[in-house]
Image 1 (tube, helix red, strand yellow):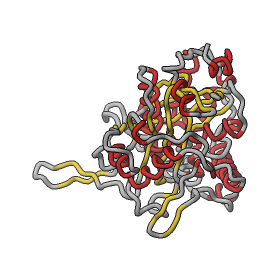
Image 2 (cartoon, one colour; image 1 turned 90 degrees about the horizontal axis):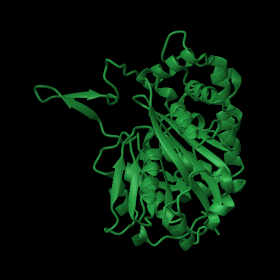
Image 3 (cartoon, helix red, strand yellow; image 1 turned 90 degrees about the vertical axis):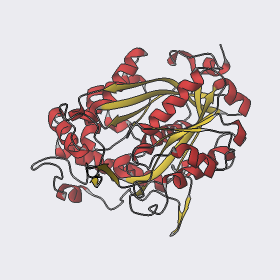
Image 4 (cartoon, rainbow, N blue to C red; image 1 turned 135 degrees about the vertical axis):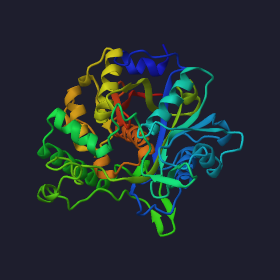
Length: 409
């Protein structure tokens, strides 16, 4: 058995041969900034290109091997509300990759960034020793106006795409979050407390420098942007309690326990264990399995739990077997509902805060989860440790990825 597999031990189920076993060896992200804020002047490819470029540069304050630009097999990027036109290819060229390196853009809405990584991992598993840059990007600030064409040719503008037939139900995200919180019995008090904890954890992580190695500063017209701007040090329980319900009279979902829309990008380097060793990578996250599940669109917030349940069962695992958990906190209520369904103690998930504090950059958020997991695994390196990334998706879906930390040297 290959060395990395021997180090990992029996905790890792279903490993492939080294020349086909996907492993994530580097991950970077931009600061996440509130939409129409510090990054509002940068289009999606301008957010993503510096991240791709940083994945090529290797050693320095960013752990991971340097890569020859021409060695990249493909660039796989998720995007949800951009202008189309294959932002992966545009950003790859903007980043200085040679014209011989192609790009493909994935759209599974909020799951796009994680699904891009899933797609790249499956390409590695198919063989060929490929090396991929995969992740996601969203510039909500510069997203194009969208319109249907009326019979007379005039535009009929709309705020969001339709995700499900009206016969199934196609609620707005906040309305769906209210439904999940009510159906699953998630109180306002639990939601507020969880959201406040997310902010406090993110503030503490930033102060301790735990985001530093993964962040790629961006130059904007207003100056350098080097830090997330969502976490609020001054937020307290009394202020949280004063936020009124936003989506339903007498409801429990407020601006305080919901995420803010954000601009940002995140991406990883993924290849086979064999290729990673040849590149000199010292460690990484093995991609052990992935799943995407569908649920009732009216309860779209529980999609991640459905995917994670099936994924863990397929590998003979219980949630308690997973050491690190990152879930996209679009709303506190749906996050807690998923944790309750899976039997995961919320206190051991999202160790450095999540989207409730950092913000939700739709197409990038799934890749942010993986970036965070790699950073956390490296902070407390335990070969054989399992990690789980989960995200719920508009239209009633969820994607989950099971990862495992291993040494490669």
